[in-house]
Image (cartoon, rainbow, N blue to C red; front, side):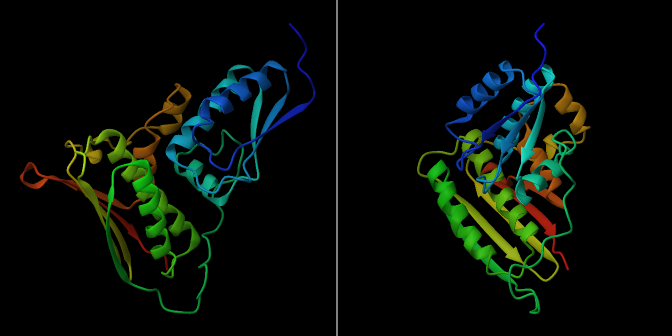
Length: 253
């Protein structure tokens, strides 16, 4: 057996990670492992948003490295990436610290928290979701929320909308309805769609996620992220017509 090199290998994650380059990235990790470094460092500085799919891809890379005795490290992880990994109890695997003190308000720290109602509709397509998420993010930024809560709300929006797109089988031409209400002490995000019945509260991640991860799980991160980033989640399908999912978060002081 060849002796493991003392060197490290650096891999830059693209700004659009995860995306069409997922398999290229995983192939690059495998090639790097073949060179026998002691450590592989992933430069995360270009990543602006992390999703459950992105976490899954990172976890596949981690498993490949662990199976070969190579340490995988994250360089310059964003606050959002750390939040997502901490929410899934995976931060220790990547040897990054727990989420730091709650983020400050982006602006207007001395003003009273804003309240507001936001509603919109969008097509259950990747383009429709990304456009709707942009509009939702613009609205959220007008509220006096700390940066961590802003990130969590946008993550919840993306994860629920993507689940509807990938698994809901929404009829062509039908739109997904979204409503957001910001009260003094509670934030509520609701989705209504005409897809097939699916109750995520019945698939709640009441298990040891670390053990599930150790066993090789690379899917199912989305529901776990949704559950870990909310204080309550309710589902209804009145008259067998529409799925109605509501997520609630207590507002930080």
